[in-house]
Length: 271
Image (cartoon, rainbow, N blue to C red; front, side, top):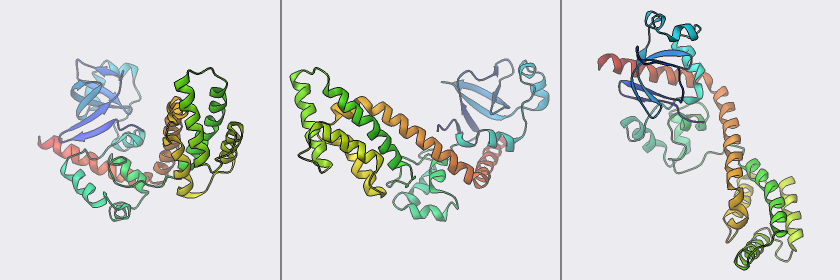
């Protein structure tokens, strides 16, 4: 989930390629709402305010987009997942970061909803010194195991040069040791990986145990070719999880978004 809507003083930035624009009247449509902008850089439009109905009626866009909305509440709902409310190194961001950086329980003092929605709203998912348990981590590792077993079997049937074969052999030894089957044959290792995919160890300890497979010595010969698939699985599951959490926290998220929009509008008026 990308942050396509940002705030900086009197400007709101909206990011998107091929947005409907009227450069003569400096109008761009985003979230089915027409906005007045003062320019764009790298597909990010610098918004100063919403266009009036009269301004939009005079625009060439009005003929192609007759059903736009001039309602901020509807705009917020249309773009619910795209807002970032604070920017790194701003006073507000730093104040929040100092409070929650080492203890996820501190979020409860600031936010009644799911900690994951709060962190996403403020762009802090990667910045804090702990991870929120999302509930999908084990599923991601299991899906990866389902790819890993067949991939190892495929690699075993390939002709490898001496260096690659030695590295693959070392990786298999490390995997067997990590999975507590040090004396297993390669075929038995693949069977063991399949068994773990069907009945994985429970809890965060299980997640960490399976995740280590991707970081064992020389195992990147097997895991690196699958890294894109792994990250695609992770992004998909994260998007599904965050969509669910945003739906659950929708009302308080909308309140936070409306508060930030009003702060931006006030700054724009006073600029």
